[in-house]
Length: 172
Image (cartoon, rainbow, N blue to C red):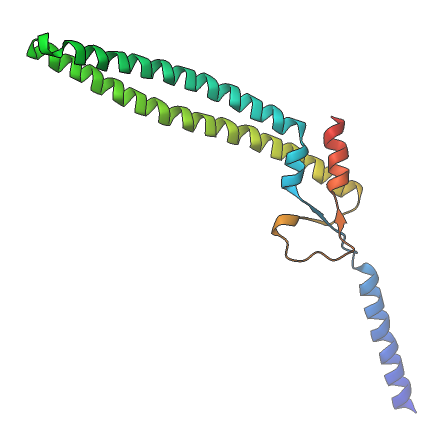
């Protein structure tokens, strides 16, 4: 009888300990968001795209001007090379070669500058969206937020944050 009493008592203590640890374990709420969809609806993204298009147009305008200058030098050289002294020919050839190098360098630099500008603006937008997501996650008591694009499985009880983020993003 003592054995049964002690085993029952031990069972009750063990059961009580397990019950208490379960109540101490916080519940985990998981939310998810499709960042690409949020970026697509963001008014800031269209502003960034317009800004990049304007900058690209300016760079291309300058590139065309430089190309016209280069083409003029070639045309002038071809037209007058038979009448030029050798020293003048070499100087003009050097000018043309230098203009070719400037064109190539300028094109590389302006494309890098556009890419850098676009990356910088998009990182700022993504940072702002991340702040909104963090705020919503705190408001909704969400423990973890996943990007839908990189998630293999989402249980039905996961919370889609898209409507919340959309509301805050378009409210600005």
